[in-house]
Length: 111
Image (cartoon, rainbow, N blue to C red; front, side, top):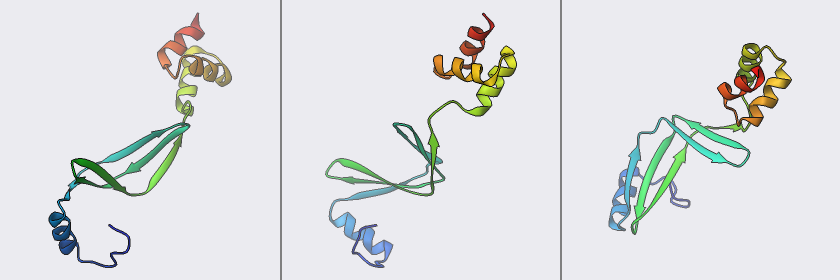
C-alpha cells in the first residue's frame, strides 16, 4: 500500500493507520471509468479502497485498465447506414454531426 513498507502484515498496517487517524474501507465496485480527453480508461472488477485522512477522502484503484477511444462505435455506423439506406461514410458523418444520436442521425438522413 505504501512504498518502502516492505511485506508488512495487512492487520498491522491497519492498526498503524488507525493510530494515525486514517480510516480505510474497501468499496465493492464493478467498474471504474475515467473520462479523459480523447477517450475513456475502463477498469473492470477493480479493487477500490477509500482512505480518509484529515477529512479528505482518497481512492486507490487497482486492476487492469483498458483504453477506449472516443468516437462513434462501428456498430452504430452500420445500424444507421442500414436503417437510412445510405453508405457507412454518410452514416458516420451524420452521427458525428448529431454527437452520436442514432435516432437524430437516421431522421436527418431520411429527410
